[in-house]
Structures are given as C-alpha cells and as structure tokens.
Amino acid sequence: MPDFYYMLYSAPCRSILMTAKALGLELNKIKVDLDAGDHLKPEFVKINPQHTIPTLVDDGFALWESRAILIYLAEKYGKDDSLYPKDPQQKALVNHRIFFDLGTLYQSYVYYYYPQLFEEEKKPADPENYKKIASAFEQFNTLLEGHLYAAGEKLTLADFALLSTVSTFEVSAYDFSKYPNVVRWYENAKKVIPGWEENWEGCLYYKKLYLGGILGN
Image 1 (cartoon, rainbow, N blue to C red):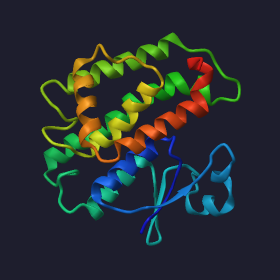
Image 2: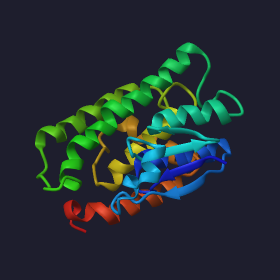
Image 3: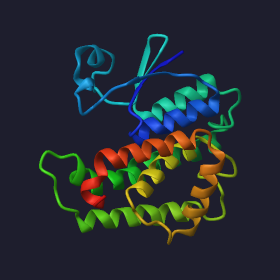
C-alpha cells in the first residue's frame, strides 16, 4: 500500500484521492500539517527535498508533484488505459488538459487568491490577476465545446485534476455560471467521478481554515 502524504484541504491532494478511489487503490494516508511545519521536519525533507505535498512513496519510490503522481498511479495501477490512454494522440490531449490545469486554470487561482491568503503580509485583491481567472475559464469553456469530458469523450485523469481545481474556485465564491460548457462539465464530473464527497469535504475544510478573511464568513 503506497504511503500518501497529504492534507485534505489541498486541491492537488484531493485530485489524487479521487483518482486512487477510481483505481480501487487504497492509500496509507499520512497528514502533513503545513501550518504546523510538518513539511519541514528532517524525516519528511529526506523523502521530498522540496518539502511539498502531495508526496507519494510506493515501495520505496518517492514522487511528488500531483499531476506526476496522477499519471504514475494510472499507469501502474489502472486495470486498463481508460483514464490515461496509451494512444499517442489521445494521451497528448489528456496531457494538454492536465498541463492547462497546472499552468493556466489552477495558476490563475494562485495568482489571485494566494497573495490574499498565504503571504506573511496579506495583500489586497489585484484586479489584473482577477482578469486572469476570467481568461482561464473562457479558455476552458472553449476547450469543452461539444464535449462532456475535459479530454475527448470519456473520463480521464484530466477531469480529476480539473475537478479539484474548479471545486476550489466554487468554494472560494468565484462565479463561473456564465461559462455554460464549464457548468455542464462540472455538474457531470461531480456525478461520475468517485470520491466527489471527500473532495467537497476538503473544499469546505479549506474554506473554514483560510477563506473567512476574504469571504466575510
């Protein structure tokens, strides 16, 4: 059973929990409290010199960066290639959506929300960074045109990564209702992706811990 170092409030961690559930893979879940400095303890830094979560240790093999973990788990533990296709073009499409999540959609969240939440001296909301979110959602809406899933016509790893991100936007009170393809995709993803309930539990935990100052509740 792989060891999984995580916190439930983390969107990248939640994508892995949902993927493991879809694969029927049990994880030995080990909480790493960033606020308490658990990630800086020597025993954890020895496993992951970048001291980040999520981190996976599978039979002595350590891996971090959530999207790398998603791909590893699907390739090693998938009963077939449905979540991460072997066909080069289908795989490229899944990779594109995963990297779109990393570099565009999730990154737009980081640009706008993180300075307000996690810097030592909290910064006010930046309207220019808010525009980056709108741009990212517009692009995602375009990518979903005519498709129920993020990468083609069936559920893949891309949907897991993007669901953890979009649900974090929702719990942060970002209104994406004007993007109909995203709304349609999101409502379907919540129904078909295993582990949605735990993902949403993590979203609410994140809201309770960090979002009160900017949401006012």
